[in-house]
Image 1 (cartoon, rainbow, N blue to C red):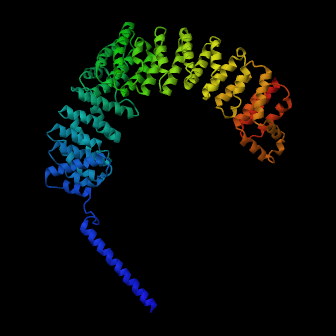
Image 2: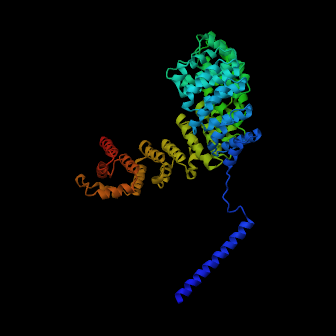
Image 3: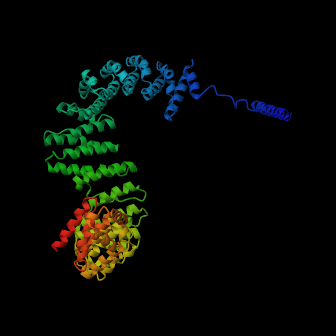
Length: 619
């Protein structure tokens, strides 16, 4: 009875709860009827309906929405058949949009693209040249192999079209066809037709034919598809001044590959190219300069070369007034030009001075060019400018400016003292990164002019504690070791670096060792340094392990492993190099030490040990 009552109560309570839930849901549906309903129409569903609408305006608006979705990365490839139905229209704008859609999704729907072939072929026979050009351009851009066979006949007609706009479009299409099927393009005579089009009366057709031939020639294995001869050269020079800026770049690139027969022909070509210096497009200017730089090799008239050099400076300077991105490209080209012809901008140092709002990449390029232009006449002006740059907030730019001062000192020996004085002024500013970079630079100056500026060494040593960069430490160690005889406390300065030797950069360790080995520090100093060094690296443990016999190597392999884990391999080698420097109480130890390295698995360690032992025995 208890069980039946309890089960009944559970059923009643369940029924009551379900009734309440149903009531709540009913009220919710009444207040928000669309909340639980599954949408029957998605965005693509609505677009498909509009694409198949009987109203022209609605279909066009739907195509625009499809292109907008495609532009932002939404997948609308499912609408391919519906968009395809809207190809046959007299509305040029709508046709362009449909063709754009086809070019984008042709690879995902290769089977359906074939359905558009008839419309393409029909459009290539249209009375409107814009539609003819649009059709052949789109067919060339659809990179589907199944459509290639249908492209040949329309392309052949467009290459011979009476309208130059259609011909120039078809010329580019030949290059696209060659990329897909070289044999098909050659067998159908399209490449030969393209070569004939270089002599076309229209400069735009000539420019596009040259562009297509250059692209084909670059991908060809024979490299003989585009060869410029005398008649072709004349046509190119005539078309150069009449085509668009991009056509001029293509023609200039072709002229750069041509080798003139003699100096007279080179002068003639250069004379026709020089007017391009006045063009507003920087790419045209740089292309023209490239052509002239190449042809100047063939010109034997020195006066003509001097005139060309004078004419090249103004357009290059003008490019520096462009946007930073254009400036960077121009500066990179100027840097290369100055390697061959530094006299071109010899009097234009000031235009390369850095502005406060120049991007870092532009400033760095300007620095390199200023170093190339530095000479005895402008060095004072340049040093003053570089000193100002050293107070900038951009640390990387400051470092490069300080290095530029050192490069000027090395390049111009007459101005080296002035450069050193500027570096001393920068060291006296006590700016850490400036001081360290200056020490690195002065080391290079000492190597160029040994024993000439020894008086500044005390100033450098005063900044020993401020050094925290490996390159600066290595440079100062080198200076101390090289001029140890002229430094009273050279041993103390060297020992300063010993405390952090184990953690130092390889270059610092190397310079530390070289100073001990090749400088004239007395034996007492060397002995003190080596004692501290060997003690720091547990020299006694090294000796204990080295006493193990070679035949017991396997038995004591664990001890060796512990040793090599505790010491870096380069530290072990460095210890051996330092040990063989001096001869004294360590005679037995020196003989024992190489045995430690003979047991190494790495073959280069036994070789090092044997070499050091031989060096010792020779001594």
